[in-house]
Image 1 (spheres, one colour):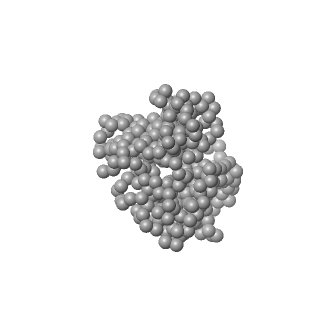
Image 2 (cartoon, one colour; image 1 turned 90 degrees about the horizontal axis):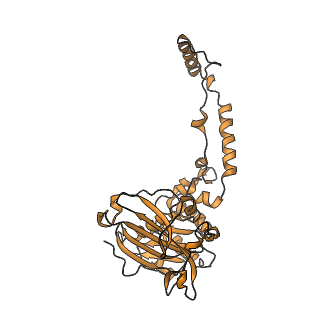
Image 3 (cartoon, rainbow, N blue to C red; image 1 turned 60 degrees about the vertical axis):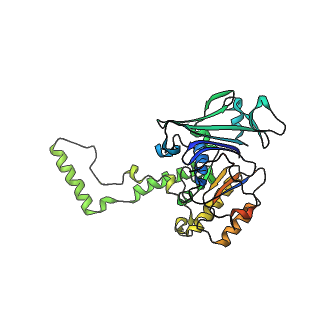
Length: 336
């Protein structure tokens, strides 16, 4: 997947952004509060794999809720099933670096086939995700299930969730299938109930006997004797109980820099299958040596089959500038 064009209207500190992207690696460089992270947030929201986003009045530009938030992300190299007419085949558009995005009736030389996803949020905080063309501005709704197939991943301040096997985590995305793990965990839950004999605890055994005595006075006659045992609902082990370990130590106990690099390595492995990767503050938690090594690794990340990397940095010296391919938003970008 390659993001080719981004439009943002009335979202947080951005009044208007209209940005054409031609590179596989994009770095946004600027001081704090220059809305670098806001752009990553906008991309993530437009491709969000959930049915709703957590937004409020403060997410509207200048707090003016009468101006609808609009985020449009146009991308190529989409999942092949999206091209079916039953999906979004009739909403495929064209794009090239010179002419931008246009409907296929205006097909230009060198066009890539692209799809545009639009997220709108109105003053009632109603969300709507749709795929559209200029010929059909109302578009067609795109479900959270379909958006999840784009597998956008984000590396920010919260790293530990990516080291755990749960919905939206990189560990789960990299594995691809949790059915086998679910079966093992269900079996483990059942065996735990069998092994743990709480009736061997005198206090609990006596409590069960008291319950039987008191309920008998009210005419309750259970088919079997009361006893104390583990509740299967309470001890059920879901895939969220699975975490990455370093030997006998959870990977979440590693240092911040190491955790970010472990999570990033998994995300890069996912990105080579076409998933876009969003990295907030590339140098956060890393010493200069590891930062340089990471950026050197990125320089080889330009094969057409690879995904796309968006990152932010506070420094134009020794960080993203060493890639020699930084891209900054154009002049219509108006932060506070």
